[in-house]
Amino acid sequence: MKKVLSIMKWLGVMVIALIAFLIAPILYPIVYPYRRFKWSNKKPLWYFWDAEDGIYGSDYWRKAKGITKSNFWTSYRWCALRNPMWNLHTELVPVKGREKVVSQKGELYRDDKEVALSKVAVIQYEDAEGNWMHNSGDIISLKYSIIGSVFRWFTIKNKLYWRYSLVSNFFWRFWIEIQLGVGKRYTFRFKIKFKKHA
Image (cartoon, rainbow, N blue to C red; front, top):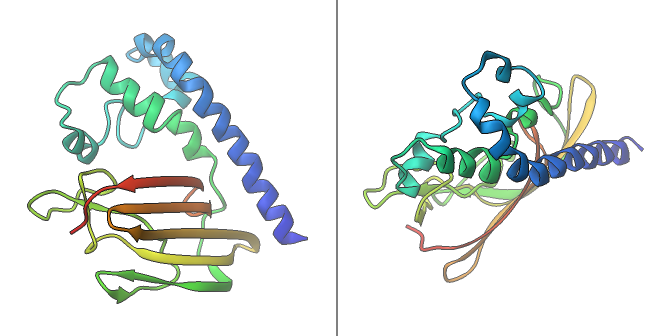
């Protein structure tokens, strides 16, 4: 029963995230002009901003996309399309603390070396010079990506959580990345990439 409740809680949070995903592209053009007013840093407008990387995007993303301007279109791409209502997401978080494994199954590798199943399968990128580009770029990095899959149940302060992640190169340049469940926050990620790797 605890496992069912854990999955149901994740689904509930995903419904909130879906609503944010749907309304951010519509309402962000209305909210953006008020970004410099102090009262815009209070809820509910605060939910539309990104207190972690700013409203014009992180450096790695801007570099990967070749973005040099800090204007409405840049902000819209970051805060309404890529990370809709990001500050809201940062409040939809599980209990903080140390994970205690209940069960786990899978295999994860980075740079052809096995890594702990506490990690999350994730695609990472590098630029043409081999510099790490986080999760945005043109070249999928086998050196920095965590490839494989893992499913684990764990507790934090006696609360039960779960996480599933997968990264696989199905053929040639076709990659898939899935993250579901709980990490630092409640997560749903499904990406299909068609890119070269190094």
